[in-house]
Length: 104
Image (cartoon, rainbow, N blue to C red; front, side, top):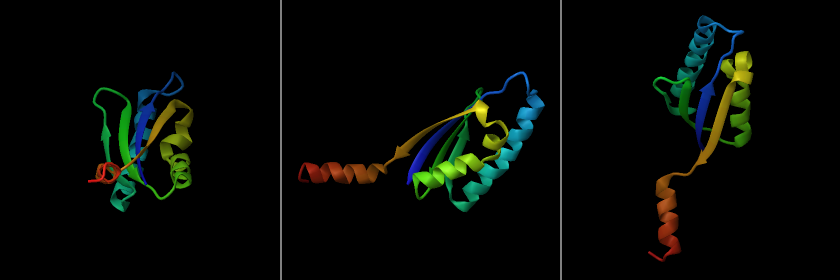
């Protein structure tokens, strides 16, 4: 199953910018490793914001939940990370379904 993940990363006065960047560097290694393994289809950093967009290919919602709990950024500062998750459907599959429904 494909998922679109929108990560918003905050930080407060208990963490200096260097601390945030250290955690983010660790997270980047994990994310790029997941991309090499095929779990992450692709990912992008939003310019000028502490946001990352990810397309992930995961078998089940349970697997995705476990993966999210295990991310370095979630383990170290999860209370400051918001993740908006959307399940995705391939457009080709949707188009085929529409054609079938209208008899074409």
